[in-house]
Length: 268
Image (cartoon, rainbow, N blue to C red; front, side, top):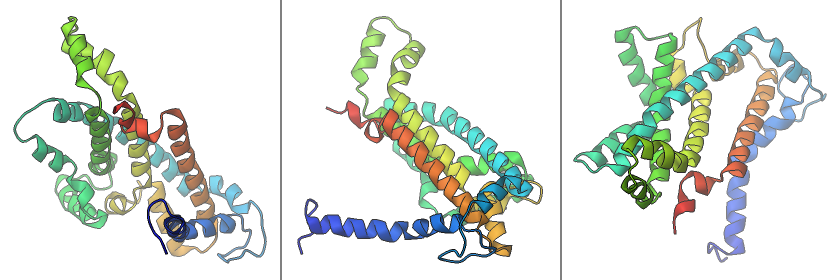
C-alpha cells in the first residue's frame, strides 16, 4: 500500500491514528449525559443530571474560580516576561543568546513529575507550598517557555526593515516598538496568551505537589473526586472543558489563523 504524503494510504493511516487518540474523548461525551449513579457504558438512562449538579458542588466551583484567576494571572505574567525576552533574543545580537533561549525553554524538556518534584523541594525551603504565589510561580515555570517560543517564532519571521524604516524617519526606539513592532507581533501574542491560559488551567501534575487543603485547582479537585467517587460528574465537567478548549482554538483560528499567529503569514 502506497503511504506517500498525498496518497490515500497515508490519509487512512492518519485517520486511524486520530481515531485511536480521540477514542477516550469520544466515550466521555455519552457518559456525561448519563443519569446513572455510577459509570457505565452505554448508560442505562440519559439526561442532564450531572451537568445540573456540577454548579452545586461547592468544592469544585471554588477550585474552578481559583483556576480561572490563576490562569489569568499566569498568562499576564507570562506575556509581561516573554515579550521583552523574545524581542531581546531575536532582535539583539549578543554572546550567549542561544544559551539563554535553551535555558528559558528547558522546562519543556523535563517530565512534569520531575519538574513538580524539583519545585516541591525548592518551595519547601522558602515556605511557598500551599500558597497562591507559589502556584503562580510553579505555573509560570511551565507557561513561560511556551509563550516565549511562540512569540519568538512570530517575531523572528517579521521583516526588521520596517522597524529600520521607522527609526530612519526619526521615531525613538520605544515608539518603534509600540507603534510598529508590537502590532505586527499581536497575532503571536494572542496565540501565546491562549496557549498559556490553557496550559495553566489544565496543569495537574505540578499542582498536585503545590496545593494544600485550603487552596486547590480545578484539575486537582477533579483528580481527587475520581479517586473516591464513580459517578459521571467528572465526565460532565470534562465535556464542558473540552468544548471550551475547542471553542478557544476555533476562535483563535478564525480570527487570526494559526499560520499568522506563528508569523508565517509574513514570510515571502
